[in-house]
Amino acid sequence: MTVEERDDNIRVAAISPGTTDTPLLDSRRPPNITDEQWAAGKAQYGADNVDALRRMARPEEIAAAALAVASPEMSFVTGTSVVVDGGMLAGL
Image 1: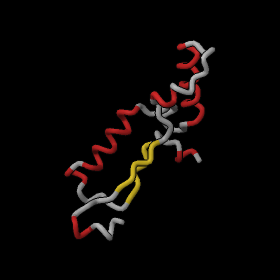
Image 2: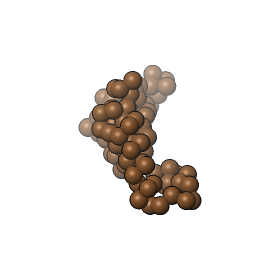
Image 3: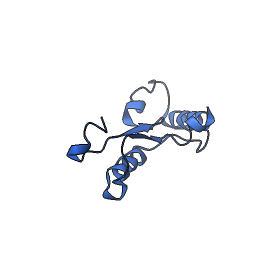
Image 4: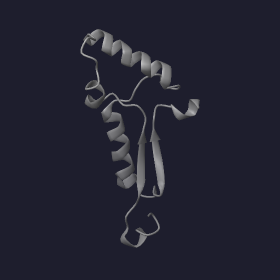
């Protein structure tokens, strides 16, 4: 796609996020879990599964990566995926 769109000056990049603490994740919370238990469980999941940063991403961190890639300062970035996973893949 990057090559196909080059004549129209369109850059193509994908953002590949890791586990992110979003309202969708919170919608899966079991009804019998307290706020404190849920927060502790999410923190433990991040610590256990995100090898480098040991926490889940915040939505604004994923958004910041997308804005950075789309910015004029990164105008030579195309045809790639930007992994925003806090080092999750580094531990595999």
